[in-house]
Image (cartoon, rainbow, N blue to C red):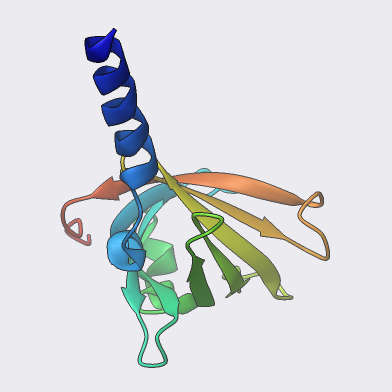
Length: 139
């Protein structure tokens, strides 16, 4: 019985203990564009004002090189109670308008689920990004 309680307690602590640090979101992530199906990498970093931003650091399609360095996501703040990053603004390259966004880290921080939407979250799309260790070589 003690062993069962110990294993249960350790398991619960492990599940609750991830993403306690807001800076866990920082790093390089890869995703496929939901519209063009082309790959790209972005870097998420902490801005001078303490919020989190993302910029394009690699593109699969050489025609999209002008997007390199583009800061396309701003204003994310970490909500520890909800264990998500909220309040962000997303500017999709090549499209008009600004979307609201929030992000959750899953899979021990190796996958990022970003939801972009207009108005309310119901009218949006979720895109998965995968953490990578370095920026790919641009061709």
